[in-house]
Amino acid sequence: RAKDQGRNNFQYFTDDMNIESLARMSLENELRIAITNEDFVVHFQPQMDLSQARVCGYEALVRWRHEQVDVIPPDRFIPVAEETGLIIQLGEIVLRQACLQMKALQSSGISDQSVAVNLSARQFRDRNLVPMVRRILSETGLAPRWLELEITESMLMDNIEQAISILTELKSIGVAIAIDDFGTGYSSLSYLTQLPVDKLKVDRSFVNKLPDCPRHTAITTAIIAMAQRLNLQVVAEGVETEPQASFLSSHQCNIQQGYLFCHPVSAAELPAQMIRMKSHLASVTYPQATPT
Ligand code: C2E
Ligand code: MG
Ligand code: MG
Ligand code: MG
Image 1 (tube, protein in one colour):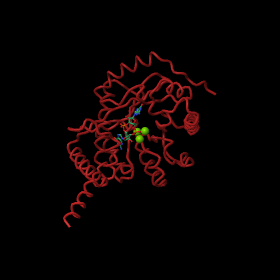
Image 2 (tube, rainbow, N blue to C red):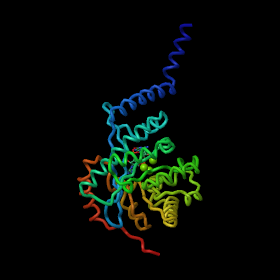
Image 3 (cartoon, rainbow, N blue to C red):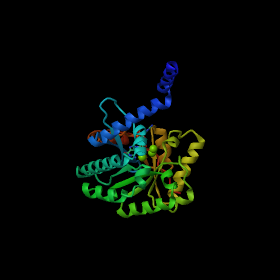
C-alpha cells in the first residue's frame, strides 16, 4: 500500500498538468498583488506616417515591473488576467496611464498624435466599459479624439449585433476603433461594411513575409486595397526591414509600426527615440504609390 501511495504521489508531482496549474496559480496570485500595487508601466511604440516622415501616434503596451523576473511578456499574463477577470482592473490601470502620459506628451508640445490602447475580449463585453472610458478621459483630460481602442476580429464575430452596439456607443464618445491583427481571425468580410471601425492593422505574420512571399504579398495588398475602398485607415504592424517598409509604402500603406522604426519604450525614453527616428527618416526615401 505504501508503495502504491508513493507511486501516486510521484505521479501527482510529475504530472505536467499539475505542475502547469501550480505555476499558473502562483502567476495568478502574483498578478493579483501586482494589480493592487500597480506594478505596471505602459510602454509606447510610435506609429510612423511615412508619407509625411513623422510620428502620427503610439500604441500603448503594458509591461509588468516584476521583482524577480526580468520580463514577463504580456502574451503570458494577459490571458491569465483575462480568464480570472483581473483584466478589468488591469485594463483600467493601463488606460489611465496611457491617457495621462499622452496628455503630458501633448502638453510638452507634440500635437496631432494619438494613443492606441488594446482591449481584451472580457473588457470589450464588460457593461462598465463605456462609462469607464468616459471617466478616464475626463479624469486625465485627454480629448477623446486622441484615443484609439484596438480590438480583434474574434471579439467582433463572437456576437456581431452586440459588438456593433458596443462600438457605436464607443464611437459616440469620440474615440477611434482599430481592428488589431487583421487577417488572422475569422472576420466575415461582409460585416466589415457595417462595423463602425476606423482602422485595420495588418498582422505582423503577413508583414514579416514581405516582400518575397507571393501569397503574403497578395494578402497584404488585398487588405490594403479593401481598406481603401471601405475608407478605412490601414496600419502595418511588425515592420522590421527597409524592404518591408518600402514595399508597404509603394502600395499606399504609409502608416507603419515596428522595430525598424522604434521598439516600445517608456514615455521617458521617447524624446531620445524621436531624435533617432528623425535622422533615420531623413536618411531614407520611401517610395510613394502613384495615384491611379
Ligand atoms: P499587439 O497588440 O498585436 O501588439 C504588438 C506586439 O508586437 C507587441 O508585443 C509589440 O512589442 C510587438 N512588436 C512591435 N513591433 C514589432 C516588430 O517589428 N517585430 C516583432 N516581432 N514584434 C513587434 P507585446 O508588447 O509583447 O504584446 C503582445 C500582445 O499582448 C499584444 O499584441 C496585445 O495583444 C497584448 N497586450 C499588450 N499590452 C496589452 C494591454 O495593455 N492590454 C491588453 N488587453 N492586451 C495587451
Ligand atoms: Mg495591438
Ligand atoms: Mg497586433
Ligand atoms: Mg496581438
